Image 1 (spheres, rainbow, N blue to C red):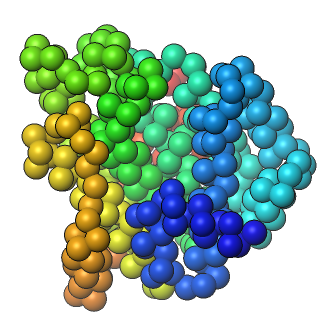
Image 2: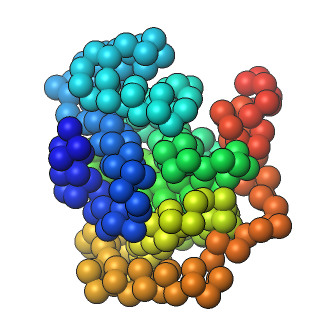
Length: 309
């Protein structure tokens, strides 16, 4: 099982695989197992023969998680991980909910709905990583949520064309209008400035969430700070490279080279050594970042009733 998890991370989560080497062996093994399960959830949605079968599989998985029923070896392993690390089933169910929403018509209306989606598919992973890393102070969770959201926004901006090829438009209509995904594959001269501005706005939003994520590094065990900071910087660099390319996502997938990863890793380690990161002691979390997330578990506004969101 651990070897399988390592293979999944190495082949499908290269930024995380790179950063994982900075973790201690226990935390690295746990994080790798969590990543493997998250990929499994994605695969249930993406590799099913039909949306109907994918819905059924995800619904069955949700029942298994809620009922603590080990329906296969992967589910058994994540249930063990959840018990070992005190991961709340509600958080795992939010992740499944988010992935399930990709099976319908993906046409986001506004930034609030997009941010709620980002919480479900990535902010939840931030929460679970805190549990995996034995973080003791729950004040860390809000920053972990924000880091996950920043990373997911970067993914969305990088993968506009790939997602459009699957019939999905994550760019909200409030930024790009109610265009169909096909129009985003290679936007024409009228749509191009609108779309590039939309990507620019979302990347600026991602920067605010990244900053909050880094402010929470001091909550992490000392040995985990470097790994999380490096992973964040690698993702952040993708968005910044996209900006340097005039937000042109359609000409080719933006990546960070091995040399670039080495440079970013050294810079992150230098910042930690010099106290330029993980120095958020006394910095208050910006509650406005969680205003769009009202009612979702473990957010600043998680007590807000559903009907007032």
